[in-house]
Image 1 (cartoon, rainbow, N blue to C red):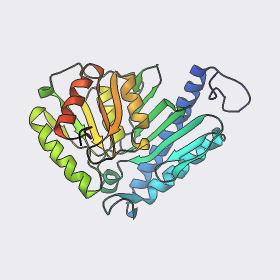
Image 2: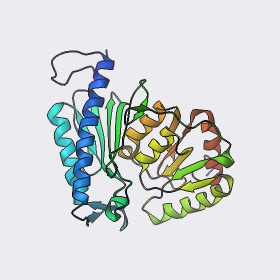
Image 3: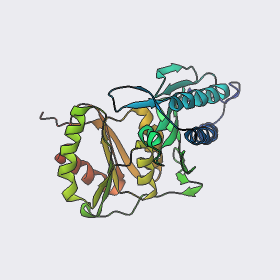
Length: 283
């Protein structure tokens, strides 16, 4: 029996589907509350509290406050779980086999500028496998969610990736890292890919990009420089809607993520590798 099969009150064993359902419900409730908190705070104006990897890699006080809100609610409900948040550093706590992976605001630059495309992302991992994930667009209130082997939904409506199209008809989503060298590598790769596809969009939130692939409003996604909290929930949502995801190494050496419908994934992966998005074994 999995070491994760523990209920919220830490006393009774529950089945894996029951636990997954509990985790998804908790993630959804907390994410919706956190998104409302973020939206309310945005009405008061936002400023940069600090920078991280570069001057353009910003964090606001709302990022920090939202993460504390999420951490408090999750660990109050499940005090023996581990927690990994973007603003809080490495995972802490543990013992239950469950780990929460949280991005309090994925799309902080959008949040800073008032562009309505930023989200609270919460994923629950059980013994190293993500089993539940919720992404809530804090600007619109739209809820994407999924649990393992149970499908993905947007505001309760089942999701499915877009039907296969040719590469030339594909709308591709991407993002750019905050460090100058990686941006130069990404820009060159985008220049190689652009003539081969319908178009490329950079929307500013990895979690929401993955949800767009899940709901069929984009055909594929690739980005170097993503972190676990960026994609843990969104990647599960995409997979449960029929996509394939792969975490690999990008051309400049950072973690990269590829996502596309299962039927066209290998073709897309080969294309982005040829265009220079990914590290090559010959380099």
